Image 1 (spheres, rainbow, N blue to C red):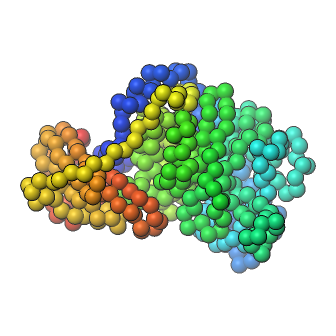
Image 2 (cartoon, rainbow, N blue to C red):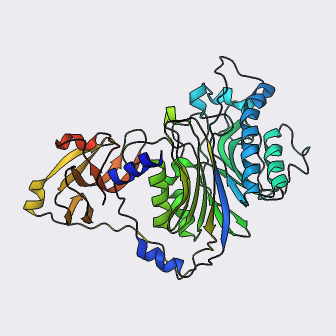
Length: 434
């Protein structure tokens, strides 16, 4: 599997927003203590598809299969010295649409989750404080019994009878990350703001900026599709947060949304530790987890052929918040007039339903540039061999297929054959090194 990933890494693109110099300067100012973090890519057992709403007991039985697997991996992580474990999005019952869990059918799987900013609660020590909170008790005891911080993704069932916009059900339900400290105390809750076709969940009114404190740094929390938007992802980083925990149910999309390349790039450009825990359902394109640092991946897992989940444990640097005098990088765009020669040599290719301006990469050593709208991309390169065709492209615009978000991308891409139409087709083999 690692060989396949290396092929992907050198086949596809360099996301040229990776500004190493800025963050090498930051790293010189960082506390170089290390701490072990862990993520668990879970091969989730999906509940059976049913026509009617199941009972709470049936929902708990379905979830317990996954919770027991998670318990075993958490115990293993603790034995390896991990101080924190991140669990995947939808890790207890799987992506709801896959098993026909609409908004009503999902309710037995959810629990009321209090606000840890106003309620001090250790579910393991005080299990009777709230009714029907079995999963929260389980997670709290898991954290306490293994002396480890636990970051999990679950569903929050919030009553709203006093809200004039409250639905007839009398409650709202949110895709929610919850955090327990190493004594089992409930310390943080985050409602996912940017939902991806998740009609079974409600969207919170505001993007919450959620952090929690540990002896090894301040951690920010957000989920999956949030990473493509300013709020809350960039907002956290602009506030100086250097560690992110990221439960996700990430589906790979060719060529720019492969989990490990996207998440590692995000960590490098932001100068942060980024702990990404994904589901492992390769038949649905859910796979790829990692522990990423400002210098790249400390450890990752990318397996598209087997159904085996994987626990990852790795040392990461202890990163404190950016000081007020330190600046994170920003991506600058410029208006540029492309020469007639450049214009004549470029062509347009659809990549993930967006038309990129593309120029061919010639020779074994050289430089080239290409612009699209206000984005201009430059590439200086040296490669081994020139018997395979590569192109360099740019896109600056609003993406509207399978979601709606703004993209600026510089891309180095291998073509399948000598026709430029093949440059947008999937290929995972290459003999060229850059």
